[in-house]
Length: 523
Image (cartoon, rainbow, N blue to C red; front, side, top):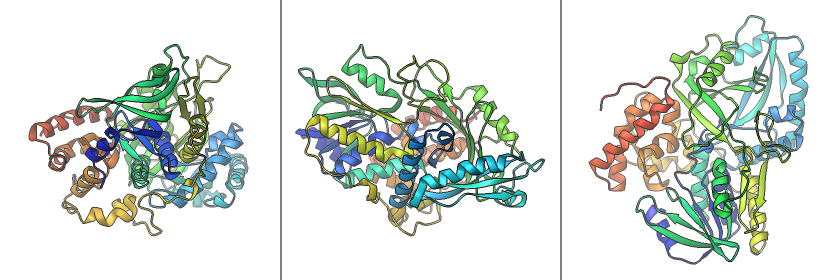
């Protein structure tokens, strides 16, 4: 068992790390696991919680990117499809095949999109999840019964992967620890150490004790997502920003709005994006948008027009269609889109590349940004290759293409504990396995104990937002479950009643931003 205390002591013990990663999202965790699995001495520091930002707020798809194919970015799609197949092999308890129906209401839609999706199959090669095919009207409705029938001619079926993003992040964390790496959440980096003009480590603060520490490293990787420019300014206050961030909004509704076995993909909306309606944890996720934002924040909020766009577009294809009153949760992720070299980044972000980018500053600070969850492993591989080169580390082969992630099993279960894979039996054995947190949520008190003991959860938010997905599945229900979570977490972490009460207050304030109307709750 890795406790926060034991991990903190490992950092305080001194010595020089081979690879120090700033940021505990998809790119940071992928980089740290890549480094640790090669045998490099690896430390990851996360300012808040693992995957607290963009990496827990995706559309929940492991995909090549149909839209990128339409843009002509064949290389990105080919790489993403390969990584999709590898991730499904390495984490079958977290990634599974999902059929997508592209509804056809025009005579030309079937052949037009069908040709493109056949190319998608070809690019996936031996790692393809299933061949695309044309569907007649009855077949399309059998898979997606709530499609509007008026004018429906049929559709196209293709296959992509689906996953739970925050659970994958926690799984990468545990795999990293299993391989000898060290990681701490709630440990913000406050500055960079330099030997002359070269980066030689960082200063960081333990948010729980308030203490500030120095730690030295041969290479430092800035993998902080939409906040990479903040770290780059620690290195050089005059550096020009890399990013033109945009936000993507999703709404979560009841499963009755998409009761079939397949997702729906709308290939072209009024803003030029695709729109997905995806079954996920017995709910339906609908999104997303692509709205440029000037300022990044830890808790971005949906604009009213973004909510209306999603619901209006869904209503064009679904019957019945969800309304504002049906929305169980609204969540927003920020995309770290890299500015085009020839522009100032102003204007639409929909056309900016989703490729990942590596840049090395004059001081040797390595910045990794862009990309997407599907390609996290390749991003990490590229980053560690470059870090080893810059720092003069002994070259070592990458092992992650075939590395089974924590919990790997060839027989994942079909219940809510399936995301734990082979660890599910250990979760069931904990006290509270038969004590639900809330009648409208699929979680138990045992999962809170597991999160505290094994997954470095330190707050009610850590548990309800990322160790479980209660906040996204039903924000109001999660607010009602908060006192039960705080009670169990206080017991596990040795906290008092005042701490638990403050946790409930803070969590409910946060979760209020995920509902369209603030509910009144009694303790």
